[in-house]
Length: 256
Image (spheres, rainbow, N blue to C red):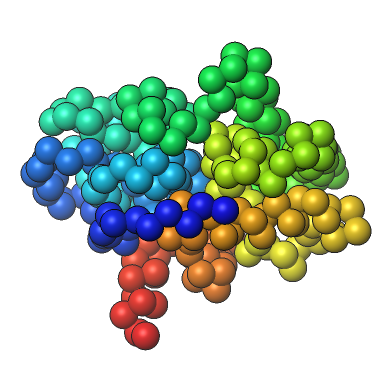
């Protein structure tokens, strides 16, 4: 497990900027345009954390987006990374591969072309997990047996990969590309443990559950974790068709 001391002091919980809010001046530090609860943006954050790259976070309100967002991300989505003033890269997997090439310390993608391809297959295979999570969150009445079966097939595939590789993580003794790129959905599914459609039964998924426990101990993951009760409350707004409270985490932190 990664236990390297991290000397960076990054504020992950900056206010989510909205329409009318000014663009913060670029100060020369690598910047991530982010949304604190976004699983896709989390991929980029995890890569940066694993590599211990110094960066700053600009959080975005994705419902009431700032007018300038399209100058940083052409599709008005997160994540986007600004590597020099007005020079940005976006889309989660693209940003991670870029970072892995430009910052070779603590490589995430395997150097061997075959292993690299197999890691990317695992990420592709996780698509039904992502899909079911989004459907349950936003379109619960559309979930059918086919979606649930595809979800479990994806889980089976990932668990089989862990078994065949015989390692703590998919990428060895510490997490790598495949681990960090699929992790955000495993983190969020923990908040749906009461839902029998997604529950990981210990009798069937003991190896996968052990893997999740190990991922939770990784420093790149643990420093960015959102407490389960806050994550569940944030998700609840979607299930009720309400506006999510992007500042929920900050409000809860202030109350302690």
